[in-house]
View 1 (cartoon, rainbow over the protein chains, first blue to last red):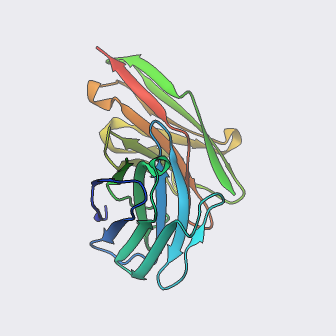
View 2 (cartoon, one colour):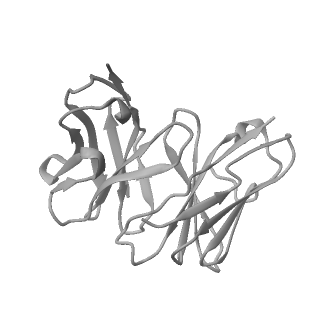
View 3 (tube, rainbow over the protein chains, first blue to last red):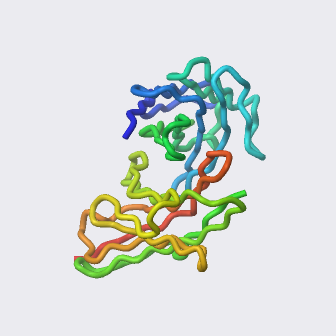
Length: 116
Length: 112
């Protein structure tokens, strides 16, 4: 399978600060990037979809001004949680996709965000 | 639009017993179906996937799943549970937009 990295793997921040999460596809070019979040003991919920060089499309209920997504290259996407609050504490998982993967998405190892 | 429903948020089996985790899907297009496993504080690991080839799909760690269109099901099975199988299992469906939708998950507990 493809190699996907996320950085940092975990982060603790104070309420009101911003946190940037990086996702890299190390051995393939991701034309599309999906970002998911997973609250404790819950399933993964799709937050947004971005195509390289385009603005992200957000799922209903996800604030685009709060969760800034940048997909500037085919191997790197970032998710910035702006003015984080305790309710944003979650496990954030990226999933790069390329058209030759036969509809299989690969997943990053996740970033656990804790907002105090 | 696609969705999956996992029946049973928690399944408990004895070591050596059959594992059966249920998943039903809904899709307006021919679906691609997946089972993932997640260990605590880790990312997702693909167990197996159905991509319209053989309806019986064999995956890693002895797991397999059968696609049944008439029942809109894609249940995951393993003949003999091992302690190391204890984890959270997610069924997922992908359709024309290639975005994957996940079920709520089923926590598998294996008793010695």
